[in-house]
Length: 128
Image (cartoon, rainbow, N blue to C red; front, side, top):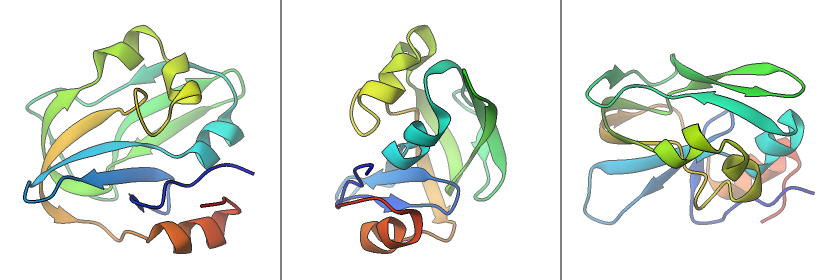
């Protein structure tokens, strides 16, 4: 069973959100539940720094040996950083989805609908 990090919030589309205390900048990645379903990730297309993403809308894609999946923004705001390490080595998303495999950061002005880790795990068969 895939691990769900208890300190994060999640979207219905399997993106996670990590919010640092007192900062509007959030880190975004995809859950271990999603990486397990996708299989080996071979390519990732991330939003450009300086672009605006809108909660619930597509902002990139992840390609695996099994399929191509859209990335959905879990928050609305300006992209402040993209993880070039996962662009160079997409396997990082599989090996460390909640750490080195983060995808991009956003200066969030609003959140889309987000689930608690418990709700996400219950809905998607993950374990805390």
